[in-house]
Image: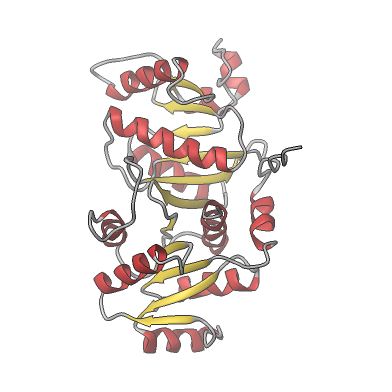
Length: 310
């Protein structure tokens, strides 16, 4: 009999458990490691058997910070890099040579790291799509796992980019074991209002693409306001029905502004732990913000480690 597929990841705690339970943790290349927040997250990842750091950057400064934090790094592989460009290139080469399973942003600017990954001749191969940011979190209402995209990479995506953002988010959802993921194309209203609200037309087109099978078994609805996407009570009160209404698992923001506002509202006002990665190339990338909690940084590394599995 063929092996059964593992059950879907049920929670963020389940995600940590699955990654930390492996015999050999994946290696993560950290570009510009001389940062207290990054070193703390790396140390916690080691303690939980989530990942094995490879430190890249000003190693004298890195060792000084690690000593102040009480973080032992003498057993970690390290590479001296004097500037951002050389640090990110070393990280990319470590991945391409198979010595690192994924990459994490340290002190380098996000744009510099992603540019190195996208470089035509020296970067990481892609399958023709785009890079996008995907966040995994537990819904404040009932604790079920949900995804949000894109809150950090694509500023004002056109229709084609939104299609690619959906595909990237669905790739993550399916790797997590979600069957027939329910996707909500978010907007301010559930009605097409063009040209006043161009995002509503994009959402309507993508939903129709979904109905025609463009996204496999995914159920795609839009445009949908946030309450209709996540609240069964709101959907019932407004007489809105359908397989996605009130039960969305994947939220696609119309632009980076609304996506980023929702991301930060979940983190600060709802107190959610957020596991976030940049996907679309052959290497998951952890791009933490200093404002992210230690728990969010740790779970982001766990998500990248999970996605980096063959």
